[in-house]
Length: 189
Image (cartoon, rainbow, N blue to C red; front, side, top):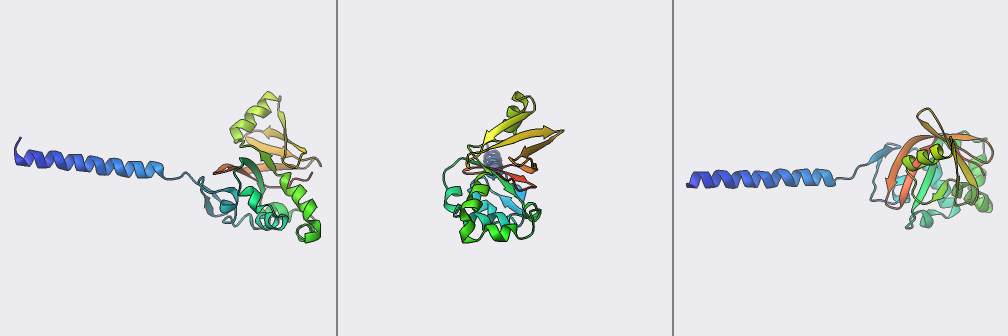
């Protein structure tokens, strides 16, 4: 093999390594989901991601007021049903302001933990449970009471103890310590 051929082969090998390195870097990139105008990174925990969502400022403030930040930064895994600011705005006027007061911490904690399931449940898991339950599935929350999951068409809904329903609007937002499903209504125990 002459010198020109060796240089050509080496160049092709170098290009091959460069190309494969580029593909590897791209495939190692995290698959994010946009929530509230911010990417949610699977390598970050629930709190690290939630604080960046402009649609979850009320939820983050409530979690801080209830003293649940450390818990939701823990190992988990947790499934968080995360109401948006618009969901909190549906509550009667003054409800959020009243709940975040120190004297109402117990009630706030009860409401927030009613939005958390112990374990990581993707929508695929929940759909399977709904199907196995002939259209409904009851799941126990960290707070201790149950939520009923059901489907209508291609949409997944959650019914609380008061009979209110929330729709899952953004599903399967993976976190390092669980998963978040964004919902459009605050659930009440």
